Length: 122
Image (tube, rainbow, N blue to C red; front, side, top):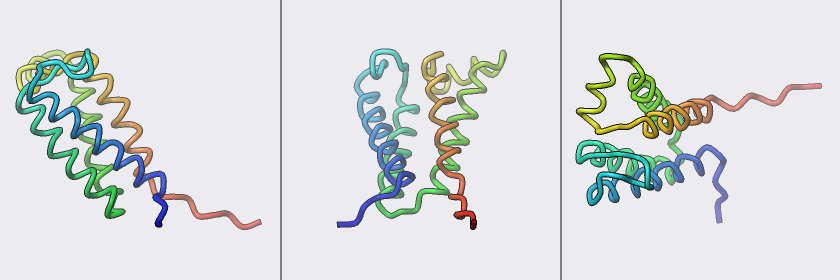
């Protein structure tokens, strides 16, 4: 049995959580008790979740983590920009908790996407 590296495990876990959130959002405007969503938001999370599961299992995680990390971080930060916030709310029905989670997960995904450092010689 092959063991997964931390980046693949994170990608797979993120994919599963996004998939759960996407499916849940198809049936409810609030996910996990605080995260607001709508149909477009849910469909995006379904696609990102499926891609994350595939990339995590295939070991092709760096590009996925860069894309998802950048996307989540950008959407989260843009929610706090006056004038842009209204667009994010209208398109995705994203609330403050969604923006904060997006920022946090986006940062973690981008950090996880960094190439591993080579061992230093002594």
